[in-house]
Length: 398
Image (cartoon, rainbow, N blue to C red; front, top):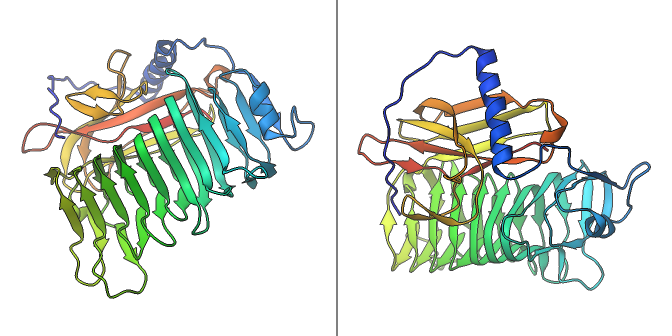
């Protein structure tokens, strides 16, 4: 799971603030163009509130043209099924309940290759159906969930992912029977609280997973249990992998079976039960690297975007802005990366440590940017040689 990056010599230049902003704006325009997106404003559809286009979320999703931006105003809505590229912005105070008799409140399915779907919430509450909250299945495109609260009761699964090529989850909470149940899925998690009321918080079979910070809390079971999977974890020294509940049985906090794991345990607070090993591995490889982590924040055109690359062990590194692409092999490792065939723009170069290498910029206040999605990814160059990448992060103009 190691990756090797050939570092080319670089020259330092001094740029004024205006020049840097101009370069980044130009880079954004090129990055948008590289995705084959016409530089024109996406259709805007309003749901709920005063004088809406639609009162029903399902009706709005069904009628909206692919690529549209849906503005969902505060209120309680019935869940829906979606199978196309959309940007859905949930306003503050949105609650989504499952349709009567439905297994899940929201189902995302059959998203074609090359298309992407973004849910941007404001701690949007998703109440589950008979089996769970959000189900993502049979998607070859990219699905992004941001600021969603899918913490359910002990009989339901917060987030289910099956046969998914590229799933991003950011700044969210998912809990229930399992917080995450993944099978044949590629997933990136940034600052997500995963929990279980009665068992394993994160369970996966045949997955490729990236976790940056957040937390993992199991109940009378490991917080993380992975089978036939490859996983990388970036911790910040306070990232918890914890078993809760009263029992006399020894229980590991993190259990890996035939799974390749890359992480540095000292960057995590690992709390097993009753003298069990914090980390239990049967089969697979272990790479004890201090994996760099990336955290991002973003907003609509004209607002501040921010990306921070961190690592407990200081080393030089850089941040890149580019186009996200679905699961593929880069540098000999399978996972989600920036697309090397599209333009890549360095946005920060310097020392990466626990404080972080940060780039903050205000997006151009341009209508055509609304709903566009970009990727950020970081690399560090340890003194021991080679290179370590972070998981990719999201910058979206929404």
